[in-house]
Length: 162
Image 1: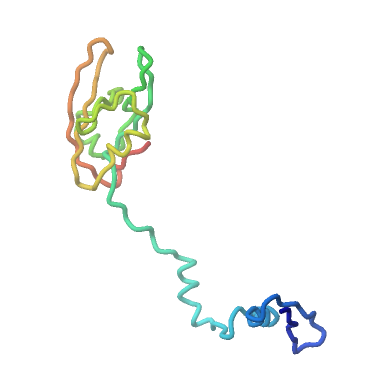
Image 2 (image 1 turned 180 degrees about the vertical axis):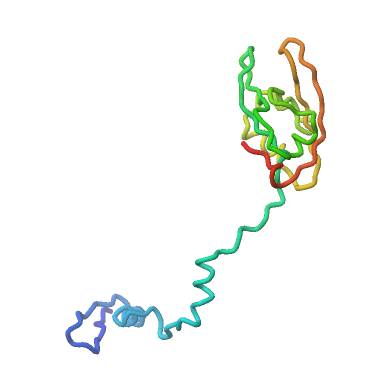
């Protein structure tokens, strides 16, 4: 069951091998290689190049509209998502109808009052080029004006940040 790995160099320590099938691996470890074939520098060049310059991750097809929301609590203690800022050059900014201080009420007809940013993100983010309908409240809490904005999702400056 146990075998000794023979060494061609008598001064090297002999190692016990638990399984005869491990003999090849044990021999390889004694001689400093991991297989019977040792790769040359030419054969390893492509792998080294990949390690130095890995390929970019695949492009995503999902993005947002460039709105940065900030969770706020209303006077009645409910969570609301307030527009904190707009990404420069984003579809939200270019629409000219979304402003810091606006409160997000609906996303594509889904009422999001009381939702966390993490719960709203999948509703706002979507396929590049698709349209999302956002409904906002603006003004005083007791008499806010409500307005709907249709915005086309775009990549780059238009990515939604959370």
